[in-house]
Image 1 (cartoon, rainbow, N blue to C red):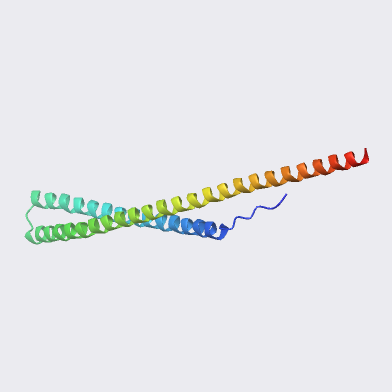
Image 2: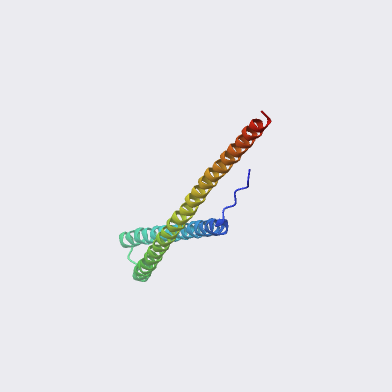
Length: 150
């Protein structure tokens, strides 16, 4: 029996490599998103801490310098949070871009795999047809040889 060789195996191998690379990029983008969300959570907790500190400062003896510092810290924290929200949104966009790219590459790879399967099925059919033809020729030859001997 002949050996099956898929003539577009190089393309399929490239599709596998591209898909692996896209998976790595997708995982990296997800990790970046998680880090950015974690940073946002830390900033939110700090803002809450400053708010509570401000309430305490207002309920105790009024120290205007501390209250002013606390309010400035709250304003800065809100700015930091706004910047971090933008970073989180950008990270989400990048995750989506990477996810779409990965999905597209997976489709392309699956298409190549189906083409390979189809080529293999055609190869098997051709092999079966060739074997059948050889068997028929052998039977005809054997039958013809027997008739000559009789």
